[in-house]
Amino acid sequence: MTAPRFTLLTRLPPWARIAAGAAVVIITYAYLIATRPTSPHGVGGSAALLALVGYLLGSVLIISGAMSKLTTSTVTLFPVAITINIVIGQLVRISGLPVHLDSIGTVLVAVLAGPAAGAAAGALSSITVGMTINPGSLPYAVTAATIGLLAGTFARFGLFRRVPTVVLAGVLIGVVAGVVSAPITAFVFGNAGGSLGQSAFIATLQVYGNSMLEAASIQGLIADPLDKVVSCLIAYSVLVALPPRLRQRFSFVREHSVFGIDRPAAVPPVRAEAVR
Amino acid sequence: MTTMFFQSGASPVHRLNPTTKLVMALAVTTTAFAIPVVWAPLVLLLVVLVPAVLVAGVQRPYARLLLLFSAPVVLVIFLLQGLFFPEGTTVLAEFGPATVTSEGLLFAAQTSLRLVVMLGSFLFLLLTTHPGVLMSAMVERGMSPNTSYVISATLQIVPAFRARAQNVLRAQQARGLDTTGLRRRVRALLPLVGPLLLGSLADLEERAVAMEARAFGSTTRRTSLVAVADSSAQRWARLLMGAAAVTAIVVNVLGVVR
Image (tube, rainbow over all chains, first blue to last red; front, top):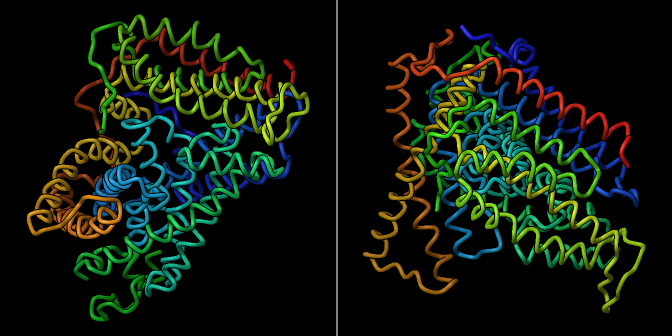
């Protein structure tokens, strides 16, 4: 019998851990924006630390909250989704396209199983990539979690029913993802994390008088929406091609009729409120 | 392309409890980012990480991987922030739009060293710790078994998935799919991705039923087949490393060293 160490963590109910994690992430970002860490001395010192620690703590809280309340069918979806992220991400990287497409699986989980599951899938995906391919993806776990959280939320409100709204969802996800990852790119990686083209673009922005954080944010705001629109569209087309029986196994899909009215007979008549 | 970093071995470092090494990686990274002295990460690298790597006997893959991951980033940081640092005031040299400032060089050096230490401490953890053992140690500490399953299963699925991708690609090529040239390769992505995703999602149902039948969804606390060794010395070491990291953060917040 080993003494559990994370007593404070495990004692909180799952939803409180997810909420606390999201709050930590938002506060971290707000603080980084508000303080505008541009002291001429020791630039980026505490900003890098805060970005790392705050985002890490937030991601861990979100993972621990979301993972403890999943059904078995959702859990089996995770490894496949993360594998999709990894393998398609690599295929695309080899093909030399200006997109990443390393969050298709995250969007799949989010649309099928809801925002919390999506956030956990994203964060765990970054952690797995960090453990096997490139440790440099570990600090970006929070971006992946944000993508999953937003995709699930948009699915909840019916944006994944038709193509135009899927595009809208992709744009919104991309905007937020670009902004959230900017402090990591700027302060932890000194704006040098991405491809050579990205760095050249950031250099141009810095020459025209943007601060490091502004340059990283602008770069993210331009590159990320395109990437996320394509990711969401691929995830959407896969989900639509799935047999409805498979989709309807997920209670999140049934409760919020994520894909519109798929099979009216398969929807349980009442108790949609009571289950939550 | 997926490299499992783990190098098996019988050194004392390999036998350490994975949590100890995880705490060490986290503490070293935090400390490197918290102390605002430029050469502090270098000291951590030489005093903590290099001896640990030498004891573990994984210095060759360690040096190769660390160079592989950090060299491009360090190079870009120096080019980018050495030449175009926005907050630089002390100009050392000017070439058209590029200005070399001492602040820029200082920032580039500091960020590069911190990054090297961050990558280095996690590479140390991953080279000397099998992911499966790390996961079971984390479950012993109260991490959800779901999380452990997801990561362990992913590491096993990726090779199978990649083989499946190869099969789909070959099948499409046998039907006349052309994959030469950039534009054709982009167009080839779609007939490749579709069957790949649909096929792997269709397998899920059976797996879920099989796992449910083996009490995967059970919420009671599980016992572990393999107990991960631990010692009171390691418990103290973890506490000390945690304390050191917290001290470094406090020093950073209070601005003592500056």
